[in-house]
Length: 68
Image (cartoon, rainbow, N blue to C red; front, side, top):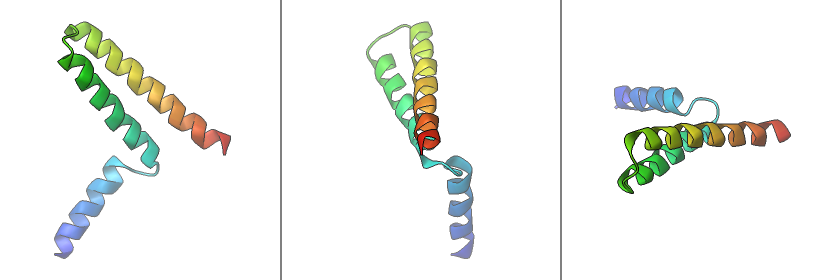
């Protein structure tokens, strides 16, 4: 059981790290990119949309932290 707790704690720290908002932004950007792909947008457009969404969400999460 101790191994499982340590394993889960490692992956949580690895994925989420210090800021849960950035991890949530990545998940949201990936989910919206999946929606764009399922809507039938060509691969180049979907990749561009995913990159823009990821950058936008990252900037928003950093701005939220800086304003505090």
